[in-house]
Image (cartoon, rainbow, N blue to C red; front, top):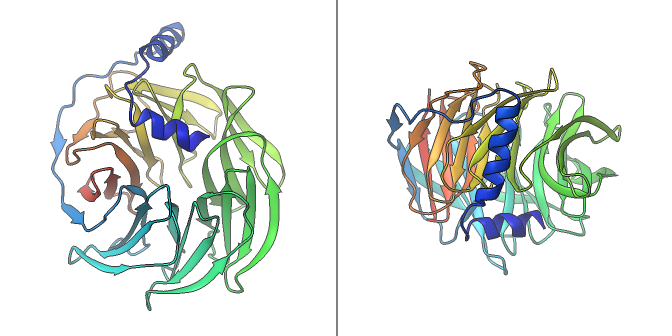
Length: 343
């Protein structure tokens, strides 16, 4: 359901009424949501061309010089590529999935790439040999999110049926399964103490952060907007962000469980969002192809001037920061991946 909502918002105009609710809420708490115009812009460092279909997911390898991008169609076509950023060339096109690929992630040592999508399978790829290593079966719905444990021994996966599974990477076997509360799953992060799921409640429109293994809610944040399109959670910085259909971006501090900021920087729905690992930088992409970079580290809640990144001609559908936070990659319906120097 959440995927269809996002797909719809990429094709229609923003909901102005939602924006009005956000503005009223911001004024009520005394926060200025309207930033100044962009003070600077950044030109692309590298544009990667070669995909035949729109791009749904992007992942950086730990070395910062290898990138995976994936997409496909809603029918039976998958599109997964690995790029060498030092040369700006395609390293491999990996075949195996049937249908859109929704998630890709590298293991902490960079030796394994995991991918998943509409075909309900998870595939592990040997990055050095550029070959499929294992196929993990067990999900009954499309697998939308993946993340490795910090030691790389366990892989967590989340599907549209609110099921989170843990896998033994070395053996390619299932370890455990957990069921999240009903709603729309928007993200999965594997931290030192286990996987954390970001959920948008179906009955109670609020963002829920769940400790998957303990079955406990870590945090719950009500949001004025009823049309959350995308979310991101930093693995280290304890920052949660949400992009909405009215063009707004919300930010919360998970360490303090406090609302931090709401920014109105886009004229169109926010269709992709990403946080750097340290939680200091945030990138948001919109239906009009604009990408904007925000400084979260200042803690400013008003009059924040984002940096404009212009390089796409169609809706932005994927964003990811490099491990060191110095670069960022964006993918789009225009079938390109753009790499930016952001620090």
